[in-house]
Image (cartoon, rainbow, N blue to C red; front, side, top):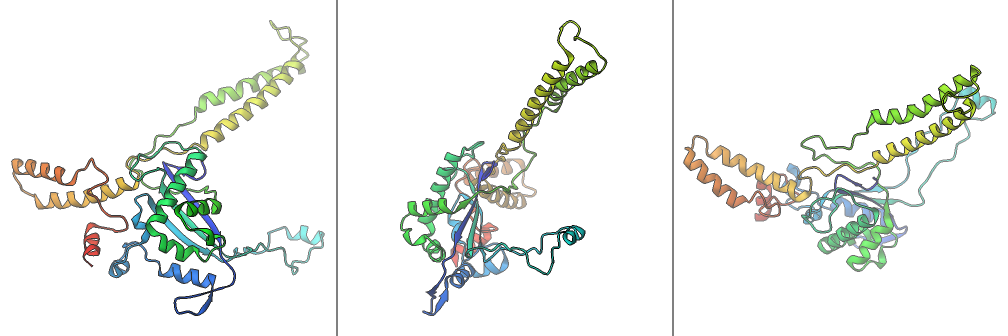
Amino acid sequence: MPNFDTGHLFLTFLAPVKSGTTSDMTGRQVSHLQALRVTLGLLPTALQSPATIKIGENSPFARSLQTHLCRFVVIEDTIYNGRTPQDALVASLRNEDPIHPQPVDRLNSPYLLFAADIDAVMDEGDPLPTTLDPARQGRVRDAWARRLWQRMEPELRSIYENCVGFDAVNTADDFARYLKRCQVETTMPFHDYWTSPPKLSNLPVPALAVAALLPLGVTLLALLAQLLGVPRIPHLGWSPGWVALAGAGISAAVIYALYRYVIANGQKPMPPADHGDLPSVLKSLYLQQHFADFATDRQGADPETLHADFGTFLDTHAPDDKMAPTQPPGVVSLSVAAANRTS
C-alpha cells in the first residue's frame, strides 16, 4: 500500500522554492534558493559520528519520539539522461536528424523535498497498526506535523519561509495543512527492523492453478470434440462449440479475477515488526548497553549475588516500560547522551 507499510508512514513532501531574493543573516540580498541551502547546511544532524558528537548540537528532529528517519533535499531541476534511444535504421528511414534536440523535461522551479519515516500512530508510544486506511493515514500525518511544529517551529520556519505558500502558516494546524498540500505518494518504503522473517499472507498457488486450469481444460476438450465432429457432449446434450465459447469466456473471467486477487494481495502492507516502533528501538539500545555492562561487571559473581543484582537491574531499568528509562533519540550511545547533557 502506498505511504503505509510495516506499521509506519513513509511521507514525501515537495514544496516549490520561491523565486526572487531575501535577506540573509548579514543583511545581504541572496536568492531564496541560496538561503534555503545555507539554512539546511547549518541544520544540525544527529550525534551519530565523531564530527557531530564533537559539535554537541543534536538534530531538532531528535525531539520527536515518532520520527525514525528524515531528510531534506533541494531538487534544482530534473536530470537529463540523454536522447531517447531508438534504432538508427528506423531514425534514418524517418529522416530524423540526431543533431536536432529532443524535448527536455524541466521543472518550473526548484523544489524542497522532505522525506520522513514515522510510526503510524496518533500518540508517541502507541502500538503500531497492522492496517491503516487513507483517512486514518491523513489523521496520523496531521497529528505528527502538529507535534513537530510545536517542538521545532523556529527551525521549520527558517527552512520553509523560502517556499511558496508558507507565508500563511502561523499555527500547528496551518503547518499540517501545508504539508498535506505538498504531499506526494510514496511507493518505495524502506524498513529494516526485522529480527525474524515477517509472517506474510502467502498465495495458495495450487488452488489458484486449479481455478485457472479447470475452465481452460474444459474449453480445450470442447474444441477437440468440435474438431472431431462430436454433435453433442455426452450426458449433457450440449453443442461442443457453445461449450467451448462459454468455457473461453469463463476462463478469461477467472484469469482476470485471479490477476486482480494476486495484485490486491501484493498491495497488502507488511505486518509491523516486533518492537519496530521508535520508543521500542530506543529502549532496546538502552537495555543492550546496560545489560552488557551488567554482564561484564558481574563475571565470577556467586549465584545469590547475581540473582539479587539482576532483580535490582530489572527494577532500575524497567524492561517492560519502553518509554522510560531509555536512550534519547539522535545519539549512538548512552555515553554520548551523557556528554551532550553536560556540555
